[in-house]
Length: 137
Image 1 (tube, one colour):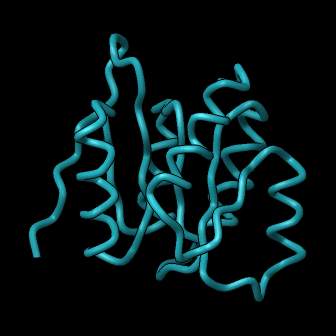
Image 2 (cartoon, helix red, strand yellow):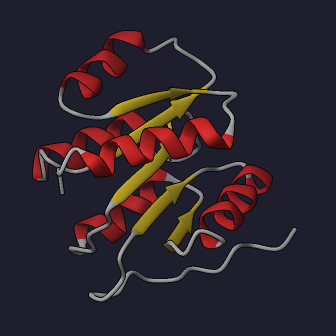
């Protein structure tokens, strides 16, 4: 399967998104969805990769992360780290599992949004538009 390319955010970009999803088919589908809407995208398969980008000071308008994925870190760890550094960051955590409800509740209480899988793209778009309309950065 084709890996979606990484399009780094630029200062002139109106919207940039970091997509963190380990399922290649879903990552590619979401990448194409946002690309057709003019987003500047970076797509990675693990929270470890994402934390490396964020740790280098790369800023995104929205971070969309799965919770469960391989690696040392997961999506909750990523959301927690981002929100600790930037409390106004726009972070969406998505998952079909709620086994870690207490930790999920913690990151949601700090500003992350939860999107249960499966979801419709219109629902995802609505969550993102709601985040962008809040004025957080």
